[in-house]
Image (cartoon, rainbow, N blue to C red; front, side):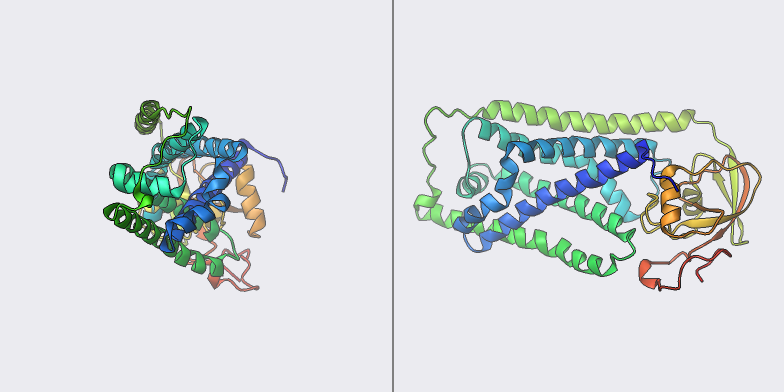
Length: 370
C-alpha cells in the first residue's frame, strides 16, 4: 500500500476536522449556557474559558474557514451522491448540514461585528436581550445551537462507528448527546427566569446598561448581512440539488445485475455503487460508516464479473489494507461496476458491528470471518 495523498483523501480529512472544530465550538457554548442553572454571574465567570475563547482573531478565522469549507464540502457530497436513499441518521445529517451555515453564520457575524464595533456583551446583556428585548432572536439562537448539535453528533457517531475500538466510547457519547443540550437549555431557561424576576422587581440586573461612549453598533448592517447569508445559503443548496438532478438526467448508465452469496439476482445500474445497488433492492449489507469508505465492513470478494471492474482508489486501498481484507476484496460502497453481471461473496454479515469482533475474527480468504 502506498501513502499517496489524493484529493479525495484530503477533502475527506478537511470535512472531518472542520466538522470536529465546529462541534467543539457548539459544545463550549452549550456548556457555558448550562452554568445558568447556577446563576447568570456563573455564566459570565465561565465565559472566558468556554465561549470567550472563540472571540480571538485566530480562533475566529479558523471558525470562519471551517464553517465555509464544511458547508461547501457538504454541498459537494450531495451533488456527487448517486442516490439520496440511505439510513435515517444520514438523511438527518444531510438536511441539518444545509442549515448549519445560515444558522451559525448569523450568530458568528453578529458577535464579531458587535465586537469590532467595541461592544463586548456579557451573558447578562445577552440574556436581557434574548428574554426581554428580542425573544424571537433568542429563540433563533436556541434553534441554531440545536440544529448544529444534531448535525455534529450525527457526523461524529458515523465517523466513530468506523473505528474498531470506539464501541464503549460511543455508549458514553450517546448519553452526552442527550445530556449536554438538555442541561444547556435548562440553564438558558433558568437564566431567563432570573432575568424576568429581576425585571418584575425592577432589579439592577434587568436594567439596560448605558452604551459605552464612541460605540455605535451597526445593527441594521448586521441584519442585512445575516439576511444575505441566509438567502445565499438556501439558494446555493437549491442550485446544488438542481445541478444534481441535471447530472443524473444526462448521465448514461448501463444495467448491472448483482448476485451476492449465490442469492437472487438484484438489478442495479452503473451509476450506483454496489452497496447502493443492495440497498435499492432492500437487501441489508454491513456498512457501519454509511458508505463513506472508512470502516471496511461492506467489503466483498469478487467471484465473477462480465466486465473489467474499475481499479480501487487510494482511499479504498487504504481501508482494505487497514482491515486486513483478503486478496481480491473490494469495498461495496466504492465499487461501481460498469455493467453486466457481477457475483460476489460478502465478507461480513449484514448485521456485523465491531462489538462482534474478536482477535481471531480477521476476514478469511473464503469470504467470511474466520
